[in-house]
Length: 302
Ligand code: SIN
Ligand code: FE
Image (tube, rainbow, N blue to C red; front, side, top):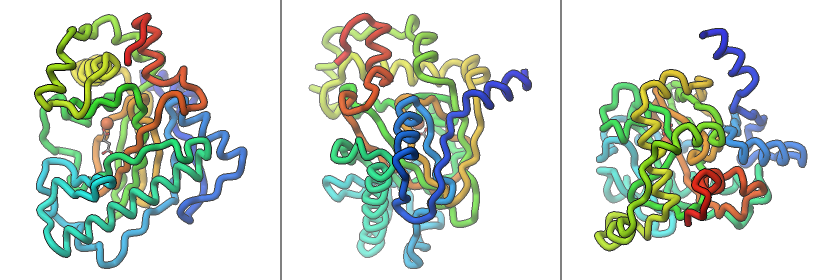
């Protein structure tokens, strides 16, 4: 068993590493091509030495007590609104500045690594994740220590991709530990036959009741069902892991989290930026979860 996993890990590592300490790093043409291919195949682009700089005055945010939610402090760049925190006044302004700077830095990083996405990615939510993951309590559905692909009940994407940039900004040098599952294209077919079919009318009802921001498409339905089915499946949780990764403090990584099954096991103090991307704007739209699920369903899902 151990041996099997070791060989699988060597052949199928989901990590693609890039040097660089200056933000944004410079990738030559070959590096950019390698980044695009790896990312759209569900790989994780790892910049182990690309540290997101925290300013001395921001050190005050790296202690207990700022978070008002169980998990994250969030920031919406489009509305310049901050949520999930007890910070007020000067402190709220300081946190807003930190997160707005991360949103901007993340966009510059993605555009430097993948010039094809320049002007195509839409900036969504930013999060600051100060809470230790290990031992954090959550409902099974919200338990991100179990392998899953990302899909959010209240925020349907209508088929658009979820691209995320993470930075481990832990001031004490603690790594952020993830587990990684196998590729979407081989995992989705295992789960698809047992996913409940969408019920006619339920998407409109959700939108009408204000439970979703916009109408849930059949694609969103299947992604949510897949997210839940993965987290519920103890066998998959045991056997679906192909790799365990410690992202060191000072590292930054980019991944399509709607595509690559992942679980976060331990760590605290990370920044994360979400972008959306239309499937048609990818180099390989056929690798997207939308197209993979559509080929399983035998019909369009948006
Ligand atoms: C997740 O997306 O499941 C959590 C990732 C993290 O916070 O490291
Ligand atoms: Fe996730």
